[in-house]
Length: 398
Ligand SMILES: NC(=O)c1ccc[n+]([C@@H]2O[C@H](COP(=O)([O-])OP(=O)(O)OC[C@H]3O[C@@H](n4cnc5c(N)ncnc54)[C@H](OP(=O)(O)O)[C@@H]3O)[C@@H](O)[C@H]2O)c1
Image (cartoon, rainbow, N blue to C red):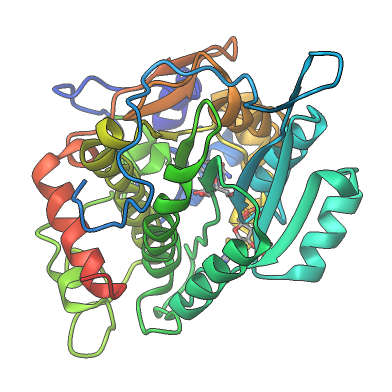
């Protein structure tokens, strides 16, 4: 039954805040579909500022409705203006959404993409096989599961002398079948450590660089997910995202003297991923509240749709990986190709009509963008502030 309900759910369906979901699924699953459900259904029938950062350049102009016309750098001899390319960092650009976004942006000829990846050779092969022209990308090493690596990346990027116009925090790990937690270099549970804390430090450090950009629209985008939003059918599939009172996060998520889970509960890899996505969406909003007015930077998040074919599901069991894409394509109709999802994220990077800050973007069945509503927890101002302060301590910024 839940499956039939999901079949009616468009990719960006939201249950109103006060609404109750009828989902009653169990298992560590994604996008409204549990493996048990898949098995059952497939078997019986034929077949989703705080001011401490250094504004070294001083206060920037307010910028709420900027355009993405590339900035003017010099005048051509005949009096025509020449325009520079935008410079965008995309984390996790070696596969899936990140690669498709890099390709979509590079193909316009208006963007130089810095592919921030943990596996240099994989990224190089991926860029080549995607047909991204050499002059439109640079690969730089970044392992978000190591705060030292994040700091090193920022140093290297600054040394490259490139401007930073847009930062896209896209990379993620998802460990739905892990029985035991694994940890980052600093000992944080790996999903929250990578998806949230690594990106938190990266974006905090690069805020200063973004602020210096003279590009007409500078943006910081953190990829979110429907699975972290409990105001959706998919977000109601257990284990649901829940940060609780953040006691595990405050304890350092090390699984030794404290829990490896943000809410202090027992380890659950699927929940850890969903919790990390809630942190991503809270972080975007907290950035907006603290820095948008002063810097003019657009802070945004998005749910690109269910891209059931990406490497995100690499650690799921084989049967799930086999059935999930056709299930999303033909049953829920929530499936989005990597190419289409890449175009959506590229739109959030560069579309002149998507400059509004503090927004969580989604797309309807006709692939038209709209401002979606976040769940109560994913838009909890008090929790966002507390999460921000704890995260600052964990990554060594406070
Ligand atoms: N797939 C979906 O249906 C879906 C739906 C909603 C949101 N999203 C979001 O979309 C984003 C991209 O996911 P995807 O589906 O494209 O998955 P993917 O193909 O697995 O891409 C994830 C990327 O993150 C990189 N990565 C993982 N750990 C890293 C680390 N420690 N340091 C640096 N990079 C690291 C991976 O690098 P390697 O190539 O080296 O492994 C890969 O490039 C994620 O934020 C995810 O939450 C996906």
